Amino acid sequence: MAKTSEKTITVEQIGSPIRRPGDQRATLIGLGLNKMHRRRTLPDTPAVRGMIRKVSHLVRVVEEN
Image (cartoon, rainbow, N blue to C red; front, top):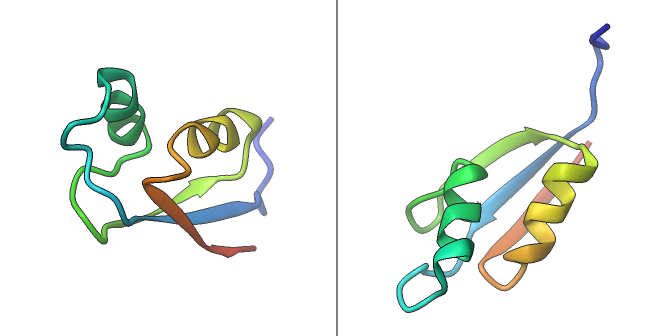
């Protein structure tokens, strides 16, 4: 059952994937980020948190609700 008021997290890409390992590029694409300064609002789940941690040097958390 899905909750109606799920927590979300907004991330912004601040680093380029150029000259980065392929898994980091794939993680950015998995987060829905592929160009600089793009923002995505994602569900705040452990999987998403792990993806953000993996590319923490390329993204920034804008806001947490």
